[in-house]
Amino acid sequence: MHIALGITGCIAAYKAASIVRELQKRGVTKITPIMTSSAQKLITPLTFEALTNQRAITDQWSPPESREITHISLARSVDALLVAPVTANTIGKFANGIADDFLSTFFMAIEKPVVIAPAMNKEMWSKEAVQKNLDILRERGVHIVDPDSGYLACGEVGAGRLAEIKKIVDTLFDILKPEKILLGKKIVITAGPTREAIDPVRYLSNPSTGKMGYAIAEQAVAMGADVTLISGPVEISPPNDIKMIPVVTALEMNDAVEKSIVGADALIMTAAVADFRPASIATGKIKKDKMPREIKLERNPDILLSLKDNKNIIKVGFAAETENIEGNAKKKLESKGLDMIIANDVSEPGSGFGSDTNRVIMISKKNESESLEMMSKKDVAIVILKKLAGLLL
Ligand code: CTP
Image 1 (cartoon, rainbow, N blue to C red):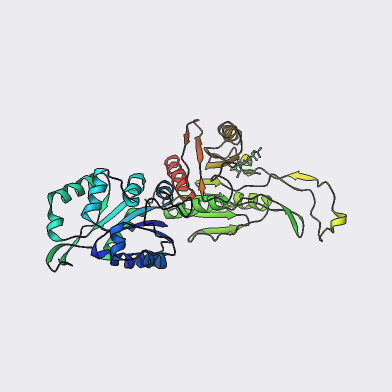
Image 2: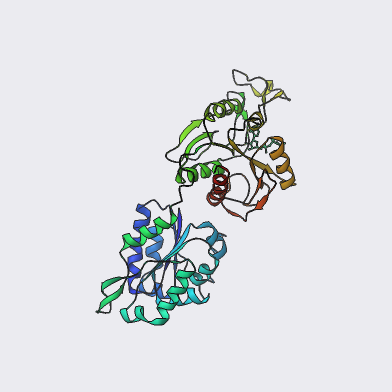
């Protein structure tokens, strides 16, 4: 999970360091700190950089460290924005469409959940302007963790103290908890490449890394599904709470799919199955001077095609294309008798094998197609699974 943590110029800014720790304790793997210039007068960016191991974003105009550090690409890659503490000033900017620093510009660009935890003096907190701005934000879907009452930094007692860290983080996690829309559904997912041996040290394969299939498996579990993941050889670790079946060849994958789909509700084939295998595998290593210049190939079974007449499960295929993306994908959808196909242009930067993002077109059997913008593979997984949940109703 990747959280953008906004820190604004309130004396409670030092508490944001403990928020970082709490987020990490609860499994957030990446935190990008965004500090306003006032926040930097109270606590240094170094504190957050040391805690998060990420460069803190402190200025809208400094050259980006990487392409990811722009308000638009960051807005796409994070799961949520948490601003804690948030001042009356930043609340005012968020509510009134002012974008004059990185945080307020980022707020405009983000279409993910936003949680803010105000902290200020009790008179400021009770001001009509502040409360009206909060009403506007609430109405627009921003989640507000109201401040507690108690001893304030100004020496007074009243409402305005930053809410307890646990309450702030609990609110964020409640919002991010996916709905269990796949509860009780049995889903078989294939991922990664297959390897087709030539001899004990050589094989035919492709550059699939399994990232898309593993992201779908992880999100399907989070949505309550009972997941079997059949994976070719990949470098990533499997998500928790799934049944994992490692395979190497297309024949092994075919066998595992046949067995696993008995009683299943859906099959999602993200695997890049090798269409051919060497007709024979040498038992010993072929010395280079003995290596034939041509290798005879045999067709591997087309796993999806062989299930064309199986109407008991919903079948989702993937089409990795380099041209006529939608047209080619539609042909595969029809010829393989699929309920849905997810097509992508593997030659487009950010959309190919191994990338963390993907731009896909989802095509249903009714020929309805939906082009999604470039997004993280996790978000693509969520969109696909929501669509699948609709098909499983
Ligand atoms: N697939 C399969 N068995 C194979 C090859 C592919 O089940 N032997 C599945 C893939 O997992 C994917 C879909 O079929 O979900 C489309 O795969 P792709 O290789 O793109 O399509 P092909 O039909 O092999 O077409 P081509 O190679 O001509 O593009």
